[in-house]
Image (cartoon, rainbow, N blue to C red; front, side, top):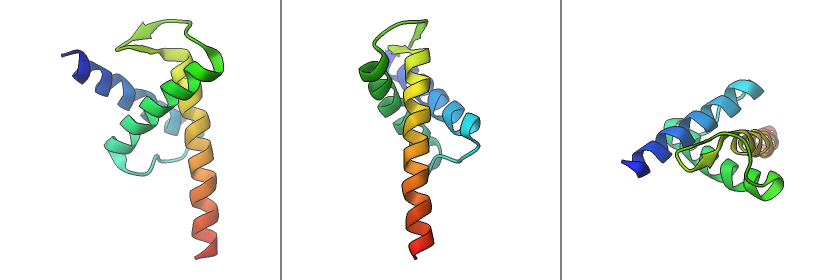
Length: 84
């Protein structure tokens, strides 16, 4: 049950990051989960582990990391779309 809870929390974090930035995360639900997991990793590297935790994620650093990740991915995909 812990793994499923982590998937849900990761998906919500990725979804919130896209919602805050006003940009869709590519890949739908799977993309949100991946953005949440990578964002949590990135956030913990940048900010450490602090704040409330759920599903094995520190929510605030994970959300900030996911926002940074979604922003970078949207910039890269935006430039790739303009070249095509």
